Length: 214
Image 1 (cartoon, rainbow, N blue to C red):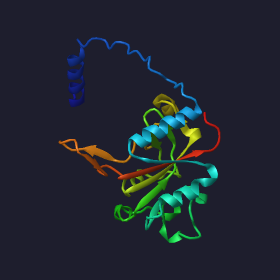
Image 2: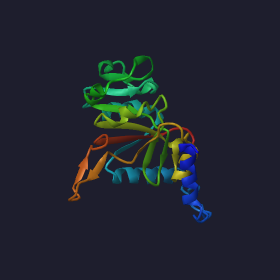
Image 3: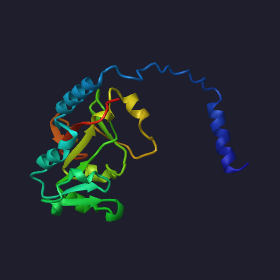
Image 4: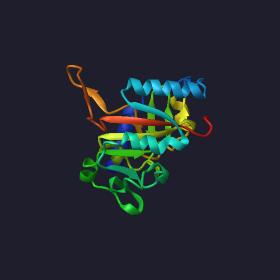
């Protein structure tokens, strides 16, 4: 008997008297009841409770909102697929650092020396205030959303779901998913809030009223 066969035989022997696994009831909610406007209101409430900044704008005001939020940043990184109409090329091209695509990738040291990052998002859960990135070209690789100290994230109202199961149905589970619920924060042993431990210390979310809300 080979070593492999011995190991498998031992596993079978150890498991021979294990009781059958009972059927797990899956009667949790699959769809939320909140309407389009209510989802936006719930999301804004959750994000503000997490100490994130929130700006609700129409589609043609995204660039102005980004420009205002990045007024104090000496430089900021953007994924290669971000909408170029959101960027202020005429007055600030020296501040913009592309990451990915034909531009190559920024090193950790370069990202650490960059003040902010701007990304879009894949889907957002209103009930938990969770923004999900999936590594698409307008969101970029995970590192750019974790290393700079300030994250400006654009969320379209059409991509806001009421609860998590709805969001998961829109996602490809094989992609690198990053879930964001407010700025990075934790508490030490004395329950003192410490920010910036696992990601950006500051999160600003731009909610864009554009297109239909499903």
